Length: 509
Image 1 (tube, rainbow, N blue to C red):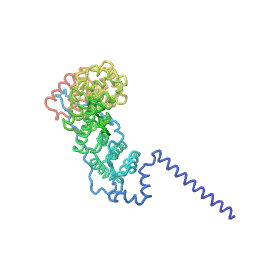
Image 2: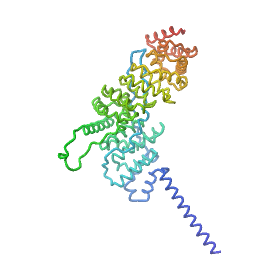
Image 3: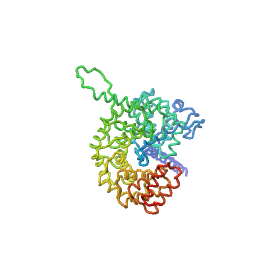
Image 4: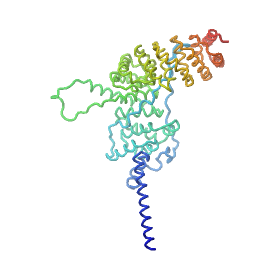
């Protein structure tokens, strides 16, 4: 009996050891797959080393309120972005709608990093911090690293942290929670402290992250970021254009070489400035676009588009030399443009006052037609392209018009008030009505959205319908007329005459 009891106890101990080993193996596998955030490992290491805990962990009253460990002490949220700039208007009632330019997400940033180091901590600590930042996929974990190791951050850590937060922050509620937390405010202080040590990639990652998070870091910081990009572009340009030297006269030893500025860094930076509606000085912008123009041949379609789109959102016209470089780059790379890049590029060119060559516009639009106008984004794509054609005075090719004819009845339920406004204004300006089915679908969308239109949109809708000589179905026309009557008191005398003239031309009481 005693032998059987000892055997049972021995087997139980072995089984417990096997279970413990199995659990440890599962945890190691979860960590290697990214299921357990690396910051958990850091906390375990800190907890296991009392000396490290005393040197690394911040005081209890300095931990993140965002993580539920510190009261906010009345801290207020950082200031939000500035209001959108007003569009430059043409003369009413044939005033061009502003259109809607999109930048997608401005690329995906530069993957973090982007600096020269400079931290006083040892290499192993620096590598550990960078590894934890690049492995973290939850903004809360990244902010926890900021709380625990912020005093050891160098420019690379700082740029990586804010880039990773922007990459993994999803939804408006989460974004508001992140950017209003004291931990994020502390990170922005680290950005300001480390900005001088960042290269163009790090600077672009900071600007891109702020734009993605819809967080305005302030005009001074954005001007400093712009100045940093300008310096690097100028240094890189001077380095590439300097004449070759005689090897015999070349100084001995290691010579510092200007860092090459990557197209993605330029694209993300300019896109971010436009998205945040921040316009640096004209001298700074002129220097940047002068340096970027000759490099556009190496830009991908989205990178090139975002540069022009950023200029449009800043309401800055780079000039004919830059525009010519854009046209040359698009000609050489037009097959890589898809629906969104095509519509954004044409919209942005029209916004900065450029007139793209007819053959280039036709090439892009024919390709867009072959791509089904961008699929589910067709409603926005075609509205921007038609608006751009009318603004630049370029007639779209017949193949594109036929594609719009076929697509409008299918995408009419996805049209917004801005899309309807752009399409009607463009068709009326070019004097190019579509087929009866397409026009009926367009005017039905206008009737559905009439109650959401402001007075100016309703006036332009009447003006466009009269100029196109298209009378909507009785029910649709009645909805449009009723919406205009409700806003009659808001209309100036000239706009009332425009509406009444349209009613007379369309034989509507």
